[in-house]
Image 1 (cartoon, rainbow, N blue to C red):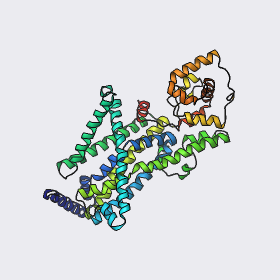
Image 2 (cartoon, helix red, strand yellow):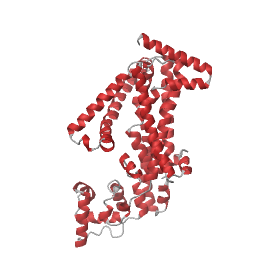
Image 3 (cartoon, one colour):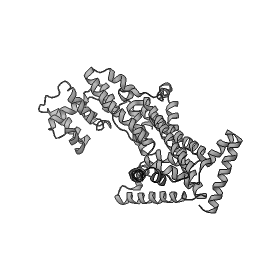
Image 4 (spheres, helix red, strand yellow):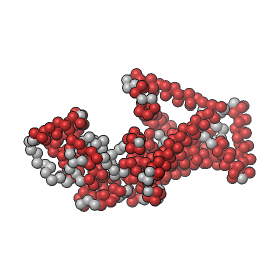
Length: 428
């Protein structure tokens, strides 16, 4: 560090010591003023993975799965707090410390895994940014050509590179970096919090059920939850077993996914180095814990909970009129149809509906309806539905799926992934 940077760190250290001596109110003020790395972790973890995971949590289990995000981020804060405590206590860079005191294989494995995680995490961000610009901000003017996508990606790369350079050294640039992160995270929190307020005002939320969703329920690893549980219970035993297996399989997957997206391995590497880069040491250990709780955990809990609540209110066990229809030409127009195709096909194999399995020549009316179905689905989607079978067999399959009872269609809809754009459309 330069002399001016050393002076700034010393000044911050003295401020912390004086604040801690003055009591909790003064300490809180100093912590709030000096916080930063935790907000960086928040900006990292509040990405596309967390959004997609939270969306599907609400679709699959309603508000009954809210506790997953809470437990996941709590474990993450404990882990990162331990890393920060060791780093600030020793003052050693963690990569060198692991190589020296434990094993170089572990240290290099950590570094390589972090680099790989960063590459995997960063690449989708360009497509997410492009989609946001095209769908939400600028519109078709962005263009859909390959050159347009490359140009947008280059601008985003240059902007992010500039922001990273701002944070390399202490000073005005670093303060601007912190303010920018806090502003971005704050806007995300306010947007999703506003969605929940909107749903509350419209009377779409049951806050008793929502609050009960924060209570951990490990039985969800073996049994369906939310409104789906009662829907499954209303079916015959053979169908209960079929749908329960598919739902529980997804619930287990989202439990693992919630923990995986809350804290990434790249965050375990970035946090200690971002603290050391600021000159933090032993007196800053309390600040580090405060920073992680207020900068990372609280925004993460608020945002992901709001997404789950909004998703549950919009999608959980809810289907559109087209999906409810028993007319094949209308049924296939539902946005849920292709997403639930595999589940519905598997359902027909387990317990064929009445009349299925009796392939016959199509009547003139059925042939016209099939032509309409092909037109609405498109060649690629119809081929996926037919699976190499004849038109007669494909028609029989589509008709059987359309004639499934409403209860099973509602259950099948909870296994369909949704997008942020579908959520925004449902709230419009």
